[in-house]
Amino acid sequence: MNKSSVKFFLVLITILLVVQALVYFSLNFQDVKDLLGSSKDSVESLDYKSIRLSKFSGQNNPSTTIKKCPFTTNQQPSHKPAIFSEIAWMGGVDQGNKEWFKIQKTTAGKIDIKGWQVINKNGRLFINVDNSTILSDQQAFLTFYRGPDFKGAIKNTSEALKIFDSNCNLIDEASAQPLWPAGNNDKKLTMKRSANLTWYDDGTKKKASKKSKDQEEYSVDLPAQPVDQLIISRVQAGSEISSQDEFIEIYNPTNQDLNLENLSLKKRTRSGREYTLVSPSKFKGTLKTKEYFIIAHKEYIGELNLSYSNHSSPIAYSHNSIILYDTTGQVINEVSYERINKDEIWQNEKSPQEGD
Image (cartoon, rainbow, N blue to C red; front, side, top):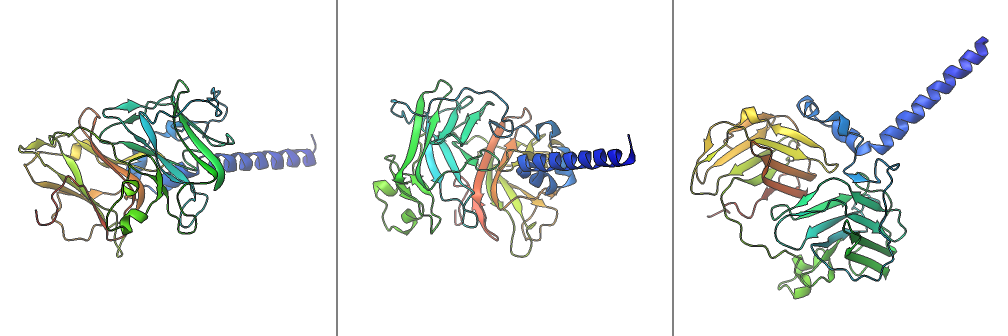
């Protein structure tokens, strides 16, 4: 083989490696973004084997053979045990291609949506939930985002979305014929479900002096839950001074002291990855009744009396969940939010309000 042939093959191999790297990055953009934006402590807690595995088939593993439920069906939606509760068919304020939607359970107790499918009219949006995924009274909804959770656009007109269970029974549907029944593309108002299952523009109910039935956000009529465990009571994700000026507050609402030994606190990003905020070895002692355990970033500059201030994995302003686990890995309490603005404090409705 002459020198020119060797040079040609070296160039060809280099091009193939570059193309492979670009393809990998495009398929795993959100995971790579989360990984690069995390601290060393967070990276150590990440399961590298799961980086290329999506929770939802047909997303990062298109070669997987899955039997799709037929989109065209004579079935009527049951609206049980879950529904579409909100659809952002218009995308986000800054990016119109960042559509998302929520699935929310409509029955009490736990449901596992493993094997469920979400399909749009042209079939390009296809989600198959191939792992056990639980919706519970404490975590009643799941949000799916274009990019990390599904490919294919939700069109602004002449579109439809359907949910099927693992036996291809039609659970719920939403359609634009040709326009969506609610939502506003110019103002970027999402389409939300009301208590009687009709749709309305998110934001209208906030301006109304008195809510009508059509302006009441859909809620699940769940049995009252006993207050017998710790709750995540407040979260601040940052301030105008610093994005690391953040804290998480845990509250004991019970009438007895509760053990903190070997609990763990984690955050979950929009891509489904979890990162450790406080490891089990850092939780010590007990939390007295009606008292708080306040955890802050090591760069926190606020005035709260902190219980622990060494976590270094930042909380995002949007699309994060904060989860408190017990010693067996079971969820004690979990909160999810779409957006916490700078200097804003999210507060759990079960925690004491100002003046209490």
